Image (cartoon, rainbow, N blue to C red; front, side, top):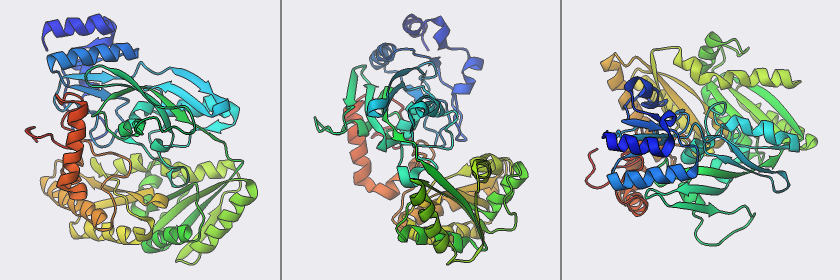
Length: 463
């Protein structure tokens, strides 16, 4: 990068907030996806105005800019594919306003997701989205990826709680979209254009989020099954019975044993599958819903239904699910984690299909995920140094995504497209769908400078 550009970056952000030495920038060359590309510079803004100045300079000099939160993304969304500048939001992590009367909180984009509840719980409020990376992921990253989580079944995902955004557009203009009101139809519903946009259309610097009252009571249970198919069918039966658990998580035998090897959470090693289920709300309602769930679950090939008797038992039940990914990562040198999602009614077909695909290609897979909303995380356990195994795994992943599409599902429920799933997006939305996304990108970012090469390629862009 030219010295004049580096000097301008220093003038905008200060010397302490600009990195240009290779060893300092290594940590900003990758995220949780297995790809690594080094940027030419990393900057740390502390104000929206600094981000605006950066984008005006980048637009003038035609330098790619890749926004980044904590790098917990699983699709390669924050990797600087075209090098240029990484814009790390690490230092924009202030709470701007907490408004308990209107159940709102406004934070900067670098605010850590898990830091919200300790603030708002004093007013008997909570922030429902609960991604697996909640302890370290940022709100800006959650919005950019439309993050989901364990409570998505009942409470929805990030897009359901975004009220207002302050955004820096690719040419440096600062806009505020959305409203703090319960209702607003002044113009397009433009705040949701940026939710799930993966940093391609603008850089969010401030986010206003809706909050909900903390439920009065929770009921938690572990259902232990003798077959994968029975567990998947139980999910469909529970939803068909008209109840909506706050959480319904699935783990297969491979995941159960990986968890137990990683951390003893009391899960039964010989179970083919388990469901971790929770209901919440008014006490009588939560208990009634759990009774209905127990009745539906016992229609299937179930070995045991255990209800947690206190908070300690409840936390113990969910501890295994929280470490599932780390546990599977310890089985083999590498893994490929997917998040194909289908309608809950066809979840049994999806589980059977994943198992058959893994067997067909002789690859090891662990299946866990948010079964209540049809969002599964098939995790292929591999050794990337084994080229023959990698070739088989890639074929299995190809078939997995096609299976999801054939079942009227989606190739991503919450991880985003980024680099990892870019080759599959056209299979789901078609050529016309890709062109529509390209047209939107061109309208916002005519020079294709903001996180270029992600989600889809622009016309004339090298794949």
